[in-house]
Image 1 (cartoon, rainbow, N blue to C red):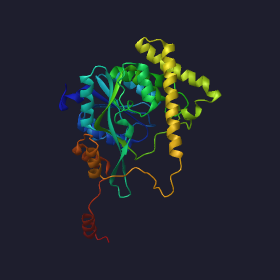
Image 2: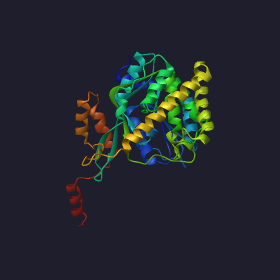
Image 3: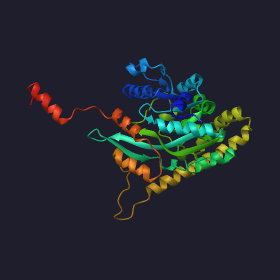
Image 4: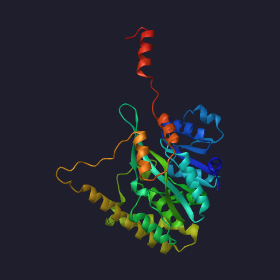
Length: 358
């Protein structure tokens, strides 16, 4: 089993970015320091200026490809040469200790195709101080371990959380999962994500470990671009599912997923289509149930439930109480990276006096 120093040699980080050079450069500095092979796939209008850390690192590869996200991911699939890969947002981070633990899990279990850790949301408050909050609470214990591909898809969709799209995956599985998105885009939001999650669940067992991995950014609005149909539409699958004029699109979407799976596994396409339809129906029920529950009026006098925004120390205490492993120095490093550099007030006052300003 690989140790901390050798595990990351088997990993490639894939980062799509679009007109956010400040955050992409920040990501390059982070991954260059970790020494992990990283592909930056820039779909923006113009090439960006690279930070010094990226130009000096042999591990960072930057590609300016002004095309859709789907096409960029498909191109990345041809470039990955390592045993494992992981998709990461340009303004987000995966922690080193979590990546190593996931790789170790995959090395120990050949039936496992995906391994994910837990997540934390981060943002800056008005004073530009880092604040953390729990995210994707459904991740913990969301393991797909059935030997049946159909059962894994159904279990995944009955209580849906996006546990595989940003997980550490075996290279061959990741390639298969991105094929659907590249071949056809369906006009409802996150159709590519759903296809990825269904395909991954079908291809093998998926696991979430009690180790902090994903730092989910709330610094920016989600990228919306007309190049990506499924990212630039208000349509939602749970609203469209039963509509008569959506049925042809629905069947085409399901067929496109089953076609990719069948080509990889040799399983009957018709059977896979039926299993995919059943799993998606479960997803629709899951989302509708959550929506209805959220819409229920609160009891009189009951306070609104909002996620707590915690300091770093408070969040570490919460993780410890829940039995989730983490490396505090890694969290501190990210905190320094995302927090703007500001001089202490006493230093600012001294400088003002030196230059004669009030």
